Image (cartoon, rainbow, N blue to C red; front, side, top):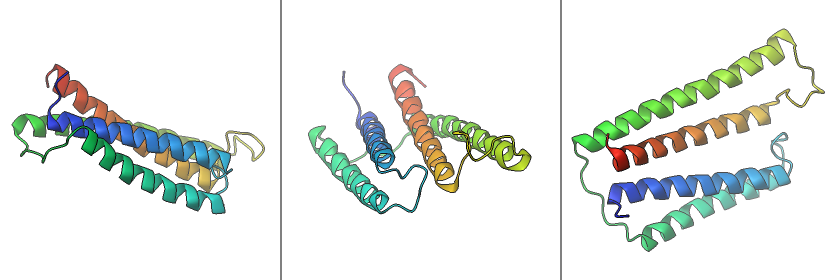
Length: 151
């Protein structure tokens, strides 16, 4: 499979962001930081996630022999625009679900603090982070599909 430089960039972005997300959420969960933001271990996890992101991007760029990027043409701009649109709509759906959950649990008092579905500020922060990661993945997958199968 022959990939253009732009497709390689998108694949590298997708793989790195998913690997860093898996690393972060696995270690944040193990450190007990998903529902408790005041946690010394979370700082270490964040620093390690940043280092992992930077080093893996550099290594993958070297392995796949990333060349300098060529200027975007009309097709690239159209594909990026469509991917941004899909990503935006996906983010809107996730944010709406989170806001709805907050309104139900806080405003109406449907959930009490003992149920596993009640949210604190740390859980909301992590849900918003997941929403942004999924929106980025939607963008990358949309671009890959349009570059491979036309767009």
